[in-house]
Picture 1: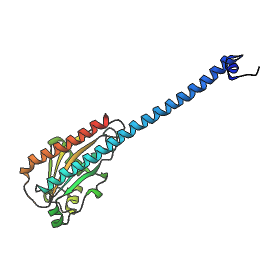
Picture 2: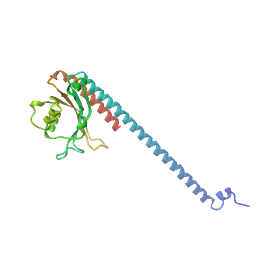
Picture 3: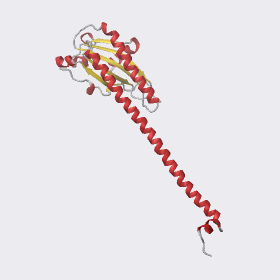
Picture 4: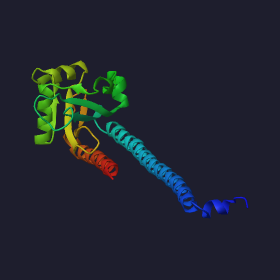
Length: 228
């Protein structure tokens, strides 16, 4: 009698053959499940990236609109959201410190009247000196810092303000973002507001407070979503 597939599977050595076949089947099933799991994990990661990207775009538009509305409805001619960073890691002596303008808005009337240009291209990880550091210390310790250009001591900040035609600069803190997992360092955000005349800004205290609180809330919300 000739061998059939039944004889092969269940005859002499058939049990071993069945085991080999079952091991092969299990291998391909496990491999398939592993690939499916990888695809699912990749899909989740992609969705998280898309969610964060959507948040970045929406939040950026919201911040930009807040700044534009502020300069259009106040005596401030230009306003910037500026990031201060210590260069990475825990703050320590001997490390370079930089500032970067993240967002900026210019009043349309002032733009034409004073031929204002965006400052953002000039301040991308701009290394700061002692005069900048003193202003940031005042902001951190006192809650704000105001520079009247003509009465400032000599230094890089005064030279910069004069070169841009700024007669008054107001700096207030927004928020400190600590170092998070997957980032190189924390950073400190502040508002820098420029005027090209000497209009008194005392009446703007309430509006400035509202603006910085709104921007702070946006950043807090984004980094909470990022951590989650």
